[in-house]
Image (cartoon, rainbow, N blue to C red; front, top):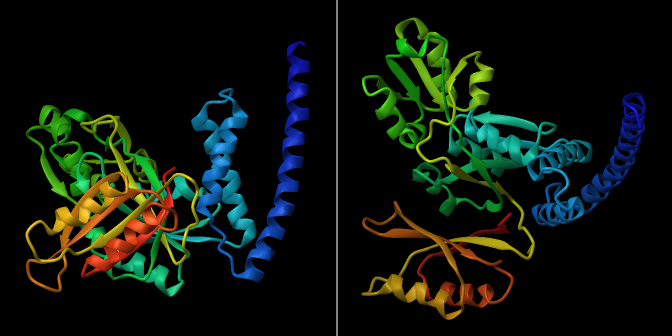
Length: 354
């Protein structure tokens, strides 16, 4: 076929695609009505996980995986809107990595609401002001987000999904790079870029801010004084800043794991992760004895962290991520043993690994 004929063929296929999307939308409306009648949740992470696996098999490697999943994300986001507008809370303001993670997980068709603190996000979800909240839990370079972790032990909410957000920070400013004297950003971002900053701007003053978006705003307001910021390309675009350097994080694979909190339990997907918290008996080897249960059941531990309980001095809550779903063996039996042994024990949620 010549070029005109190829374009006509593309136009024909595009018309078919729109027609199929309209058919899908009609089905989605019916699904939404059925879910509302039964009280079922709009967001079903285990079904999304199965759909992703099915899409990748159907694609057979023809389309770039990232592009295919991006297209699918927006289609599903539109479905959320058609079923009944979904509201998502995240740590604002606009342009933060939390904002980007919410977009990555839920797309552009849902209502995204920024909040000024983790406490406000948890409270908003508990009140039903938003359906879900997106919370950063750990960064591959800088470790656990401790400010967020403390809320999980005391909330009735559950972790029902996760988001792995690639964090590729950039240097942004509206002045030449040579004139930079002050660099603003969130402490986590400054930590993720510490080596790059030492190599490239050892004399620049580093000023922590409440968020990388707040840093972008400071870079705009104080440009005449030599201000720049570190943050996401989204923050640069929202604030009209020029990107002077890209991917300035010290480790190229820098990633933050976010979790989605809500009031629902997620059913098994076949490849799941479970997060729990517990205290251990006050005796020598207490933690070792607890961890032994996982080895005895052949269960892999992904990570282990601890935080003060804030109720009793020098007593700690241990947070652990393990392989498996809380309702599926062998993890179900293992968790039953831990519940009987640990003074404090709580399953924070089971959710798809992908």
